[in-house]
Image 1 (spheres, chains in turn brown, green):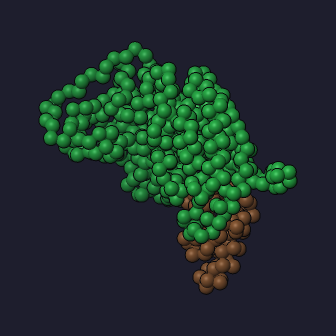
Image 2 (cartoon, rainbow over the protein chains, first blue to last red):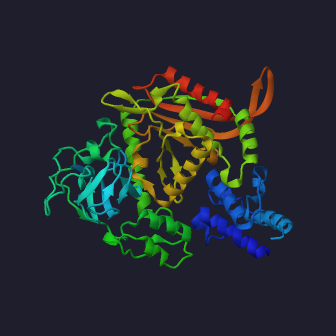
Image 3 (tube, chains in turn orange, blue):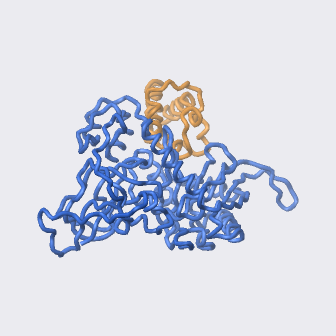
Length: 85
Length: 406
């Protein structure tokens, strides 16, 4: 998967929990919980969305690593390579 | 033969607009079946029947706005005689007070029950459903799908009764436009409804408060280990443990679970927790998560996840808006350390939780950093004494110290 593919996956997972972000310009490094007003349930569903789209396991201690668009893309990119996705 | 009436979906509701019937005359209905969708200040709500029988005759057509208590349809027992063709419904009984008074919480805890609903307002007329310029009427399924597809309901023309937007309208619409979860006019009416309920509560209920700080070390350690062995989809949030601890603590202090009606406390055997949910785009709603004391933690988590999703998609059921016996508000996600809530009448208590935060904590003379949680109970002092309120928070604390038993 390319970085572009992964960015699209992250944006899509985000839009599923916060539809108003679909067209929003969200800085890549902005903390999503604050930037998009995500609560714990939203964030959990965001993580589930990433997992469903890529198959990558995201243990709870790694949540901070996927807390921004850039962070999530980097995290998925590294794991996806291991998984040969 | 009995009347199926416009239910009161909260102390602040005066009227609702029938969006559509999901059952037709002659259809068999069972207690709990969703038979219609109604548009209210809180959004489009699916309403259920509370008895078994046959839908005999429809009295109110889609698009009509009618006051709480007005007969919407007639239900006969299975095997009973059908209504005569063309028979007119009995007039709604007259009552002098405004609908808000007719459904006041003090009237009875029966407001959840459609068939026990209070009388309608004399002279109330069936008004056509407002057009989308005033507010967006849409079925719950359409709202849910619009959220998924990013379709702006305000841009659609509804093909349903009274111009309501249907699922087909949404699925046929161009996608990509971000959909506001709550339209501006909806926000305004919801704000007014919240204002009315909160002002009524503060005006009529003598609030008192107790607070405590709970050491969450054991709880969070257990949760961390538990989530490690669960799949992502089955992981638990602290909120699920808090809800279960509250429901379980009710068995120690049942006074906090029930209603203040007819100048006395009416305890409730079921524990239905009103869960305050912030809607994206503004507004707040506290639908009931039913029978939390009877569910295991996984079921509480699934129920909470489903409730939040449906609340934000505008797909709640009538019973979820009326059945709560105690409410929990959890503002921990917002970073606040504590909250003292306002009781939602006719309930007698609301539990408030802040965020779980590391603080210095004294253990056997030593100071350690521990995750702690601020918990509060706002209670109706007519129904509950301070001593009992304190016992309740202590019971919540005890439950959280043994998370494996929740």
